Image (cartoon, rainbow, N blue to C red; front, side, top):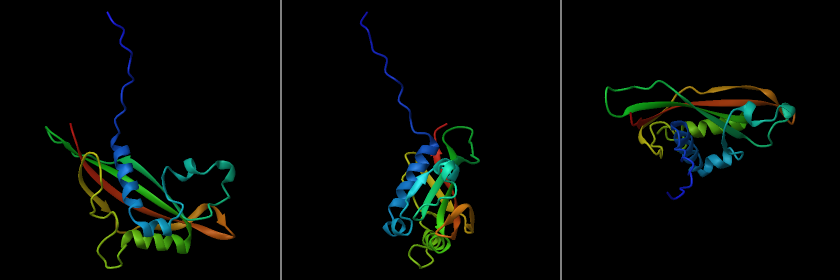
Length: 167
């Protein structure tokens, strides 16, 4: 019997991976947003992103972090189900910079046509169902430190992303 080498199993992207990739792609498709938030959008939380020893040292430019978590899903008796993921994007920086970035995410054209995510298609691997952006975004002082003597702020954007997943 010939020897067959063992091939490691291929890891398929999870629903979180799929949605995270799609959100990052949508973010980078807006060049103006890359100017407003030059620190880019990175997956993770503030505690996982910044080393603990540098807690009082802030980034030189505004930056954004995001997380994807599972929300409630609607199962049917057979066939695919609607998979909902919560996406939280945090924009961090000086208050004026964070406010500009939040305003752009809410209405990039300045014409009240909706935000960059709200009811917009995302390029997910699974069949895309919808993306909903909550109207009220949080803006609060960041407790992690200051930059050049100025208080840092965090603007939070809450999204729900729905895809159709096989049973």
